[in-house]
Image (cartoon, rainbow over all chains, first blue to last red; front, side):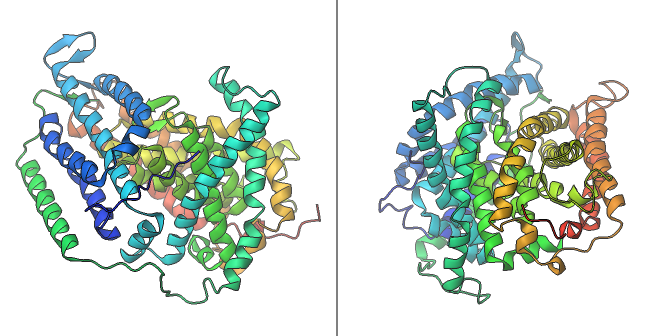
Length: 260
Length: 278
């Protein structure tokens, strides 16, 4: 079971500094939530898709297609329940609520795709170092980085242990949600024990190498902001300011929409 | 709150942050795309049993682990979004409240036996109380923010998150705690075995702090819901327009402040007792 999303490639997005990619990701969050009208979200969505294409991240987006489909269907239905409008179409769906549900679905999907672009082009080390360079204390960065490394290992352990339990007759596929949750209990204990067993050894190994001896530290990975990073950031900031300005002018809303 | 910062000086506590975050995230990811409740915001989360259990065992490391684990779960589960910001803080409190309140659970946990051995009905009840308060605290933090941002209504999300958190903890929590505690204790990985008493916040008026935390969490949830759905009718406190959101925002804010203040009042030092060998 592989849940590492990084794609080994030498694209224009891969070559950007970790900090630039993190900031691009954060900027995309800010601009996506500004508008209610799907037509205003569409150009931003296209830009994010362009980034996906440049980053060759489609492989990963395809990997989570079932999640995206489930979220799309449930989102379109649910947001119609949470909103209403003046132009009735059918059942509980109004034109305005349908537009709004499409917009919310797009926002959610493109946030996920934007996150996928970041993960597809950024190594864990680069991601954490980027956060440290942006002001995160390195001990916190180390904890995040270690967790990121441990998640695939634990997922793999869950898979191995579940296979072992299945071979002994444990049926994880059938039954109600409560029954299925109960069946996971025999998996929790070995996963927890096998993970925690190495904690003391890991601690000693870190301390023997001087972890935490100094408040500042150096890193094996070197990160430098280059011209392409500044150009990308300048374009992104300009776009964000433009979006904030047209949002300030009250564009991008749906007339006649009542939320909740 | 002192230990929340001072724990970062301890290598083993940092590893326990990673460990709790990774286990929580791995189980969150396993259930992503299962039963979606609010698309992109939450789904049925049996993994939510872990933060209260890890909070009690690993103290502040469990709290940070819950916050980071939720973020990693959002990243790898494909639901990283605007909700992830306050999801971080909400999940932090899901792990933070249990260990802070454990020694001040209205006399249910005796001073001479602060261990998490589930060997009496009082301790099981104490666990359920701290899990419920933590669930509600997590719920109102996330729901308040998402309502304020105009994304999901408070009443709906507040109830959903509380039930989602507490349902996982109510049955599985005491079982897992009973199974994990002896092993963690034997390996010397309890937070009270790793940290020094002096590194933990002294607190003040701890029992009052415990009451404030309970009132802040459960009271905030109840009052928020009443205001949101309309204590005097849907029209008066309806969600339509910005005034509806403002009423929820203002009604819940004092309770959030109460949670914050009680976090400084509660200690955790009372758990530093010499325990008989297992």
